[in-house]
Length: 154
Image (cartoon, rainbow, N blue to C red; front, side, top):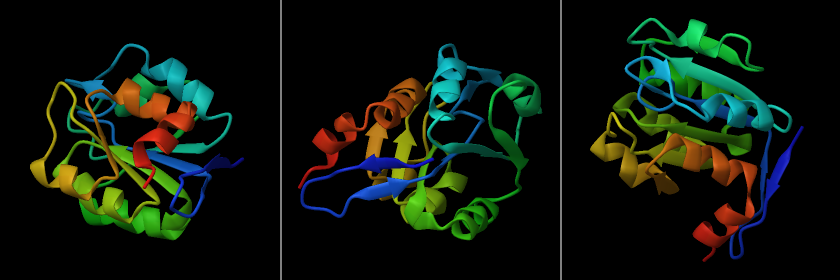
C-alpha cells in the first residue's frame, strides 16, 4: 500500500504510513469528531494508520474501536518522533495539533498541523508543511493528493 504525491519542483512523495495524534486532533474533549471515522476507513485502504496519543481523556481506544488502525499510547513528543523514525520518516505523513507533535511533523515526509477546536501549539505551525483548520480537511488532503500538489508546488 503506497500513496504517491507529485509536487512540482520537489521530489515525489511515496507514502505508506499515516501517523495521527488523537487528543485535540481527531477528537474534541476526548470524543471522535464527526466524519473522521469514515475518512480513516478510506485512508486505511491505501496507508497503514497509527494513532499515537498520550490519551489525556482516556478515551482513544474506545473512540477508535473497530477502525482499521493501531492505537499506541505514548508519553512524550520524543516517543512520537522515535516511532516515526523507526518507520522511516521519508515515507510517513503525520498530523497533529500539540507541542508534542512538533518534532514528528517536522521530520515526517509530510507534516500537517491541525488548528482545530482545541487550538494548536504555536511552534507546530512553523514546522509543518501544511496548516489546516480542521482534521477532516487534513484527511481530505491525503485522500485527494492533487490538493497537496496545488498547495505545495514551488
